[in-house]
Length: 116
Picture 1 (cartoon, rainbow, N blue to C red):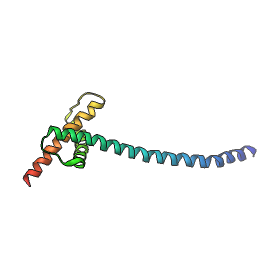
Picture 2 (cartoon, rainbow, N blue to C red):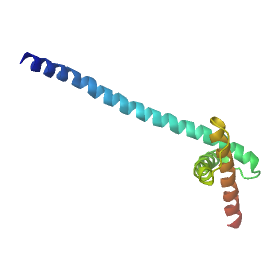
Picture 3 (cartoon, one colour):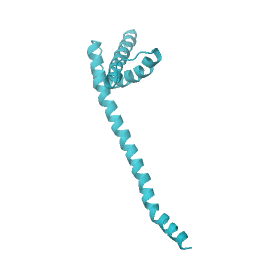
Picture 4 (spheres, rainbow, N blue to C red):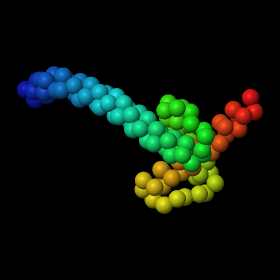
């Protein structure tokens, strides 16, 4: 009987600690999402800027370049593996295709803007 009471008290005392652990995990996940979005915006801005330098005369402004950089990264992330294209390892394996994808997306946007 004494053992049952002891385990009940331990479970009762651990309840708030377990609840705090879940809350801390949720806050950590939310913070990780915000940091990931900020990194994506910064890298997208750099990729979009580089693509704008490669494709002359297609400057869409800062936010336009960020959107094109992020879109180009997503485009290259799907397109390159489908085509079986790999470029290096590590950071270069993601950055170079992102710049190429953003440049392709800028060319597509330029063609659409010219036709309208």
